Amino acid sequence: MAKEAKTNAMRFLEKNKIPYEEQTYECDEFVDGITTANALGQPLDMTFKTLVAHGKTGSYYCFLIPVDKELDLKKAAKSVGEKSVELLHVKDLTAVTGYVRGGCTPIGMKKQFMTVVHDSAEALDEFYISGGRIGVQIKLSPRALVGAIRGRFCDILLQD
Image (cartoon, rainbow, N blue to C red):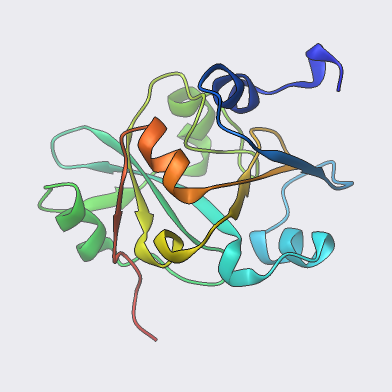
């Protein structure tokens, strides 16, 4: 792949010698994670979306959960030691992370935020996350990702 086509996320993974596979799909604007997973033939339980939240202390956090699930804000807050967290408004996403909606990933942001990955990923050999641009997904080891960004696994899902 040409150097200019690499995203910050890919450059971070390569710098840290973390193997990944890039998958692309045709898309000019945001589509939800379920649509993306279906377009690429990815299992929903192996395809994770990145949600960015801010806590009462003013700190920002990333939460990765399966695309077909919902974040439990109380569990999320507890996982990062906050009294409460709120999801970041879409209009603020690019200013805070450097990424756009549909291309947000926990790696290669303007600043590395504490990241919590739903614990279902810990049992997976690989999973899919955004590659840092709309139309790009990357497949990699959840454990390698968490190790590289000093994240953690935790139960942060809203129960059905």
